[in-house]
Length: 305
Ligand code: HMG
Ligand code: MG
Image (cartoon, rainbow, N blue to C red; front, side, top):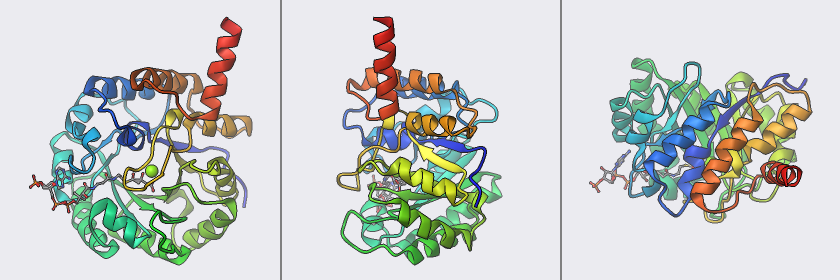
């Protein structure tokens, strides 16, 4: 399998990133953050979620955020939707792409969305049917694809089964998530070909968290299996509050550094992503975890000082 020459990056900072921040971020800050990211050439920016505000208080202002961001032509701004209530909220602000989300672990699905996996698929059937009838694009997430935070075993066949169920509902793109960052390249090399047997490669994205430092190694393995869509989060923001110990997503700067250095095109301006990370770090009042971001900031400070 030849590695792709071009990769599509889906930016998770405003959603997966901010949902894990304990202090509520001002709506105006979220809007400014997304507008900065939109200047970088990122083709997909997950803007917010329309979940229960009791589940994720941080993103309770999803409607205000989505309505106010400057939507650039050619950029996709998906939002997370768990049920018809979320879908109606998304439609009220004219969202053009939604993302439904379930998992390969029963225990995680129960904690995260208070449904069994089968119930989640049944719930999304109606959501996706409506979205397609309204002309929207749909992403589907399969979380905990490499391991569950609650100790239940996750088999690759289960990941494939859930992914195919989402595809059959009408999802246009599937994102396979290592929610708690436990996966290693040998697992990627086992799972991706099994998925690719049933799902066109160009509809498959990988969503790695970098909790144990294996995310970039997993990207490299996935590239070798022909994957050309990766989710990442600027500065390495992120995690899922329903996955204990789940820390940041793979940093967008880390991913961009790897891809650019390997001669793989993304169309994304690394310096502008850094500017968005710098902005949000200042607003959050804490350091970010992306290694490439941290190294480049230190390097620039040395040169300018
Ligand atoms: P539930 O309590 O079973 O829902 O939660 P319910 O239908 O019984 O409703 C309870 C209350 O919530 C009601 O309000 C509803 O109106 C309200 P009340 O009558 O009590 O005042 N409600 C809503 N309000 C606004 N928008 C909605 C909505 N739905 C219900 N959409 C539910 C079930 C799914 C709603 C809840 O568990 C939930 O919202 N979960 C979302 C959790 C979440 O966002 N987790 C993080 C995202 S997943 C992730 O990070 C992984 C990912 O990054 C990939 C990876 O890393 O693998 C995607
Ligand atoms: Mg995630």
